[in-house]
Length: 313
Image 1: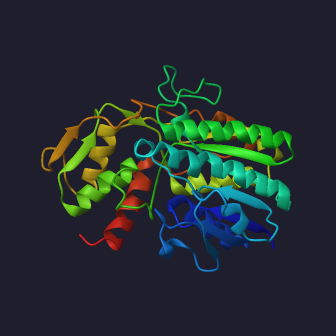
Image 2 (image 1 turned 180 degrees about the vertical axis):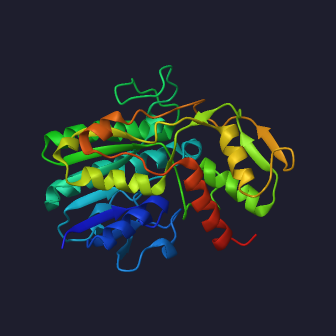
């Protein structure tokens, strides 16, 4: 049985990835400090280790088993929040990646798949943005992800097979509806479910590439056993542009509402936020055959149905 170590496995994306690995017969160990993840997200059958990557000695407490792969998702994962404590962001994002790569080399783990972010790009004139674009991060979070990718290149030369996935705006069932500083889809949905005034930070003309959770998990697994992906970074999105206004209208429509019938207030932009970004995913498609399968309408219907069932309104 193959063994996987999933950091951040009690979070939204990590718990989906862990569940998928378990269904496919993997032995799964999860690392999480439960600061933003939840114990109830940990799938049955996974072995849980509560560790905090802000502790520089965390690697001494990692499981002693040899793993086939480390999926590194644990991090402070909000550009906005990274401005609250840049040093903490650096520790949980960049230093944790370095220490984990060292641990992999020392313990014979051959494969390391890192969760990076579209935040490394910042504002780009040419859209959709490809991996060849010059990065220009606007947040400490984006800087940490970009630095981590640079470290991965060195560890690749040292014998660790690495891949970085630059995730765009991920959404889907299981997303944390209590976190009002991360995840545009979930933030809008949380306001509507609670019947509160919906606060939109920034212009409705801003745009994003919004990708469904199942497609993201497919991307992780498409890279896993594919040597073409070693040493590379990939965009994971849909290639489709969705404006904030379009997303807002679609979510309100799912509840039979419109901007005219529901209180919506536009506020100042989030610090470090980009106006618009859209993914060019040709590189991932060429190297792995992966492609997104879930369109926004289908994905939103699934997420709204889940939220209505699992949230007190």
